[in-house]
Length: 491
Ligand code: GLN
Picture 1 (tube, rainbow, N blue to C red):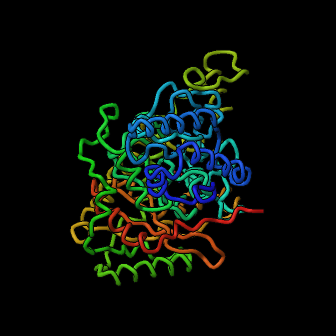
Picture 2 (tube, rainbow, N blue to C red; picture 1 turned 30 degrees about the horizontal axis):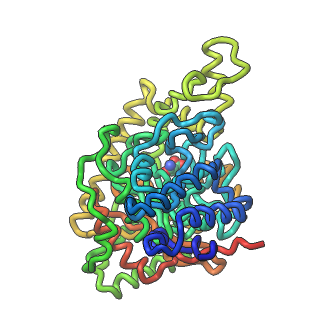
Picture 3 (cartoon, rainbow, N blue to C red; picture 1 turned 120 degrees about the horizontal axis):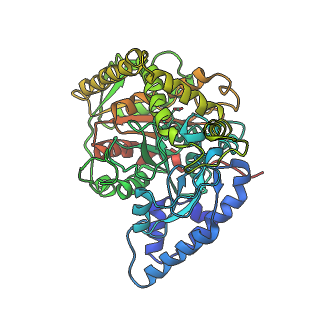
């Protein structure tokens, strides 16, 4: 099978080809390495590659298959991880200078589960430093470019993970989503991206940003592949105290069964001003599609929506200031060579190692937690967070899922928002409340602008009901398959 045809396939299709004996895992791995060689000079999705290790894992998979010891549908399928997820013996930089020499001493739980499923773990993917941002412009190692238009951002913070799938440099990737960092880049790059319910996927081995919001989740070309990857990485983990003891159904089996149309809610706060016209048109078409399938569409209101960005930036920065205190020039990190005494080690190592946005957030967060301000900021934000969650609970008494655009605009140009943090923060206006409420959310490609930029549709589900959410998304994706279209990266 030629390498162009291999890299255009979904993970589910590749799995079928391996099972039928039509190709080898080593050929798949080689095809992806060739594609990375061909396009990553332009896209810059990868921060680090270990090709020998990648090919060795693929060879192990082929040997297992020859002996009839295949570990499951992901055996032999490449999966690449955002550079905040630990893989033993591999670097983890979080796209920060402060971790430039750090090597993970152990596997994250998701990594361990992927290895146990026979997946072939590939290179490390770019992001905004410590997952803070919406464009990958905050990476200390240079931005990733949107494969659909190299002058534009891929979204963020998991921009390397979304761009790698869009550019066919990997069939599956993982990212993390604290306020939209999986769904927004998925939308801007025209691929499927899902944030599971808080507690569904273990975060053991994930470099923490804001612990009450962070979740790991998949990127892929199709909802079918997302289901396959999600069922592999989900489930209770005693090593993560926030991981929830719940059964993980086989989502990919569920998608094979017929799904009855149900009720979708349109929150009026998500369809107001600030939305690009072409985004609106594409989302309205998707709504018509669902109506045509027999879904009931109801209008609803989530009145606290406009509070979600301020609440998020108090809570997320407070948690970040505490989580990032561990990077002190002594543990994990590179140490300033100019430090002359103990206080200097902390101050100079952090001063030199952290980028501007990370510093801004640590300062903001420490301020919101400081005595005298705690009640006015942090406590008030927590109380408002409860109101946001209750808004969703009321909505879910009437509907099975909520449908919104994922991002108010398609991919924007480099520099368009990087000088203005508030306008950058606003690009997550539709995704942040899902994290504050701990709910599962997914972005599925729903069309393109006239100039060929992808547009994404967001579906938000009930807590721990990934099954319904994936089924609803699959109803759309199975027929329209916008994520299967690939950008042209030839010269
Ligand atoms: N863009 C948001 C931020 O900058 C969300 C990031 C994320 O989900 N990791 O914080």
